[in-house]
Length: 251
Length: 246
Ligand SMILES: Nc1ncnc2c1ncn2[C@@H]1O[C@H](COP(=O)(O)OP(=O)(O)OP(=O)(O)O)[C@@H](O)[C@H]1O
Ligand SMILES: [Mg+2]
Image 1 (cartoon, protein in one colour):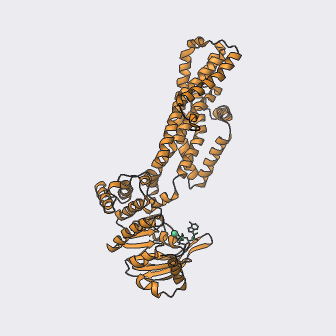
Image 2 (tube, rainbow over the protein chains, first blue to last red):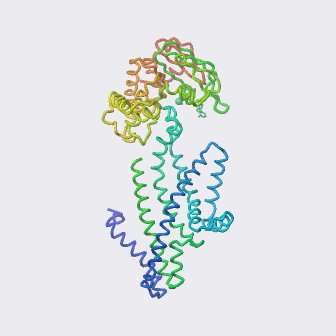
């Protein structure tokens, strides 16, 4: 059977992939003659843990708020009131067209100062939510657009009101459709929260950077930092994959 | 049923889908609307269903004029009718059973028990007893259309509207659905049916209207229309279709 090796013994293939990645980084370590000092990190474990949980908390609240903003923006884009449509469009395009780094600095130092919003944590959550909300709204918008107009018309002919059509026909379907991309967006949100270290929000990246300035063990610190984010994003990634598969079976 | 349509006009842009269409029928039981593609059949049916607002003209059904002035008045009209679409238009996230009961409970204020019993009775009558809890993706085209018919019947409408209910089906399944519609007609239900099945129109519907270029080119009792119509266009249409039949 030609080509059968391409799929046989999956664990061997997995091992090969792991070995290749290990070799890649191993070579780098060997080239640099790096003396690993993992034990030094142990002294700072409570600081790491604090930063890590802060990242989880900030991501969680930003998720809730960005969902809210995303839903409102998606509704705005479909509103019959022209002003709301323009406003939502401007918001979405401005946010999606500029880097998060620029937005963070702009909102914190300019808007935050002008409007006397000086709590870094609240500002951090607001900045992340406003950023992520634009992407969430696009996810919701494409979900809404995937409902064929024939269904809306059928609902109309059956005498459903507009609200009933949303409640019983549109939302049950859209919520299932948007779930996989939304979990993916949540994973991005967690990673993007690292940029808040820039405005001295005491989250995971900031704490690791502080430890680094004491211990000068950058390799160890940043490997730990990457691993910390992976602990959060990998399970989400698996859930997303699972939901996507469930969706494609349902269709 | 009585239908009186006067000066009905509907434009899409500059193109008139219906162009001053008139039709007056008293005391008929079933009407088949036939005609060439793009002639305006669907547009006419959608106006009768209260889904489209005409640019001009009046429609009176059973003595009551359709009030096109507001969404509320259209809603009131829609309660009198039920529509079956070519593409079935079942809600994909609901089972066959829920497709029937949800509109009953939410838009007609029917109790859960009553909705349940209506759905069960109709699904059983239409041979769908085992498929009650299946979702539309698990049903064949013919089964989906039967669920759609059950949904329309459950609303106990004054008039049933069908827009090419068999166009998406195999010939064998088409015959099966036509049998269902014929049985409904025999029960004395008021039916308006847009169809390409000119044989069914002739033999199963009491009246036929031939719609072409946005007007009723000819109409009459189906018994006599096919033999006696003086519309050349109608005769050409019929002979062209019959030419390809066995
Ligand atoms: N929503 C619409 N927007 C623009 N044009 C439309 C619309 N609906 C119908 N039309 C046009 O109006 C004309 C009549 O269409 P209609 O669907 O009523 O024809 P029909 O007799 O049902 O045809 P068929 O047998 O192909 O279903 C066609 O030329 C069509 O292109
Ligand atoms: Mg049509």
